[in-house]
Length: 193
Image 1: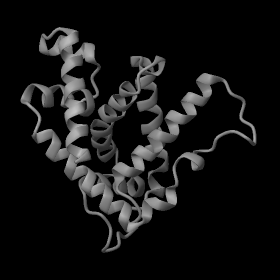
Image 2 (image 1 turned 90 degrees about the vertical axis):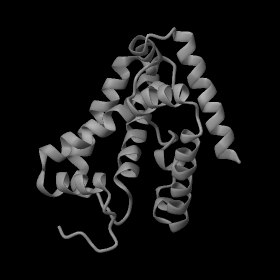
Image 3 (image 1 turned 90 degrees about the horizontal axis):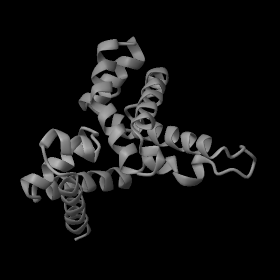
C-alpha cells in the first residue's frame, strides 16, 4: 500500500500503517506502549464501577486487539492514528457498558452513530478545532504549577490511579486528588478563555 502525499506523517500513523500493511509486531508494541496508558487513564477518569483496574485492563486488551485486527483498514488520509484508536476505544467502552447493564439489543437500542457522527471526522474544520484544542491544552499544562502538572501527567498520560500516584510520589491520597482537581479546574479555565 503506497501512502498518498497528503497523508499524515506523524509517528503513530506511520506505525499503524506498518501494522496494517506488514503485520509489524515491533510497530504494534510501540503503539501498545503509547496508547495503553492513555486508554487506562481514560477508563479511570470515568469513575464508577468501570474504573476498577480489571475493567481498565480489559478495555486496553479489547481496544488493542481490535487495533491489531483492524489495522489494515486504517486510512491515514482520513484520520490521525490517535483519532482512529480513540474511536475504537469509545466503541469498546460503549460495548462494555451495554454488556454490563445487560440491556438486550433491540432495534430501539442506542447506536454508536447516534452518539458520534463520524462523517464530521473528515471535515477540515474538525481538524482545525482539534489542533486548536491540542494547542490550548498544551499551553494550559505549561501554565500549571509543577506539582499539579506532574500528577496530571501521571494520571492521564501514564494512566495511573490516584492511589498509585499517591504511593509512587509518597503523597497523601487527599493531596493527590486535590492537585488533580485544582489542575483540571485551571485547565478548564484557561481553555475556555
